[in-house]
Length: 94
Image 1: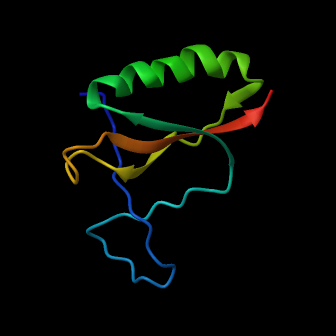
Image 2: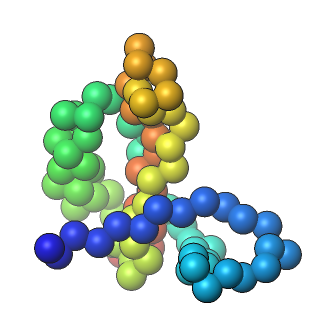
């Protein structure tokens, strides 16, 4: 009940706004990018490792921009493959 999720696609600037779908601009930012290639059951442990192990020692802080994922492949499209995506965490130096 507390989970929030946005599914997004890139659209051209000249695309006419339609009230059935919202437009979200992601501001320019510095981002820590972690490429993940994993099965579905490995996604959550991978996230935990990034946030628990890497981020506290990185010299960066998360910003108010929500983290996001950029998908390149998913097993739904190719059952012999894994999920391949970038986890992008907007950050700023300490």
